[in-house]
Each structure stands twice: as C-alpha cells, then as structure tokens.
Length: 107
Length: 120
Image (cartoon, rainbow over all chains, first blue to last red; front, side, top):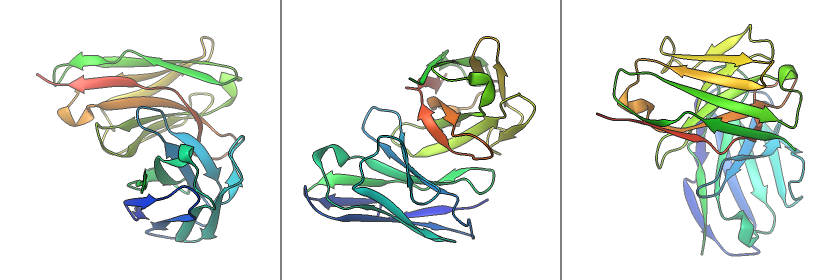
C-alpha cells in the first residue's frame, strides 16, 4: 500500500499569510495526487486534482505542485473561510490512501 | 447540481448487519464510478470501496474485504453498502462520493454522510 504523509499535522496562521502544506508518498505516484478541504461538521470538498488542476469554483489563491513523491498545497493569501483541515490523496493505485490531514487554525 | 444523499446509518451491535444507501441526482449516475469513504470520530478519511459505473469492477480496502459489499442500482440512481459482521472499528461517518470520471480514482462530489455506530 502507498502511505501518504502530510506535514505539518497542524499550523496556526493569520489572514493574509502564505500557507504551504506538504504531502509525501511512500513511492512514486507520478501526478496522481489530489487535495481536499474539510470544514468542521461538513463533508470534504475537492480542491485540486492531478497535482495542480483546480476543481470548479475553487479560488485561484489555492495552488498545487510536485511530482513523484513530494507535493505541496499552497494558499497564497489565507482567507477566513480557508480555516479547515486539508487532506491529500493518491489515486495512482488501490487501495486509495489519504494523508493524515493538516489542520489550519487561526493565529 | 450534483446531490448525494446517504441513509441507513444507526446503532448496531457487533456482528450484526446494516445496509447503507446513497441516492444520486444532478448527473448521469450510470456513467460514473462511485466510492464509499469513512471517517471515524475525530479521525481522518479512510477509503472503503469503489464500484465501476456498470457494477462489474469492485475495489475494497483490506480492512473491510469479505465483510462489506458495494453495489449499485443504476435504474434507481442508488449506491449501496452492505455491511455484515460489523466490528467496533467500523464505527464512522460513511460518505458516498462520485468519481471524477474516466479512469480517475478520486472524488469530486461528496454526500453529507450517514453515521454508523457499532456498540453493544
């Protein structure tokens, strides 16, 4: 199975900050990497697929990069509605696996 | 717009069974693979199973293989998860999710989930 490791597990940031979350795969997953956002009590939402493609309606302040085993999600200027937990997921092979999540909190 | 509405959750004793349903609308259900993903209380996301658009290809997490069965009725736009031999570790919020499309294996839309609690 492919293990997905996110870092940090949590972070505190202020509105307007640039935030970067890292996701590492235990083996090469090429560009089969996706990011989700989950707010408390809500279902996850797809943010980015295929490393860097924004899902419909996702603001352009979100971006993704990487390939192989190392990937990043960047929020260029954190907004109040961005405080949430973010998960990466590999879609290279089954079993599909998620990272442990990164909780973005208000500083 | 895409809507996915899960139902069937509840409190069940260990070893018993439960059947979850997910009714889909707003897209051509019979053209897309579908997923079940679960989230234990206070924990992260765990993929459970995936079913191809035609029901012929199924993938399962090892933790549920042989106990949980994914199926669909395309005439009723409904996805199912038959849960047998339930264990305490199956306690979670179960989400139904639509596959993005083609040969992809990720979820572009999610339901709100249905809670399964396995407890004596």
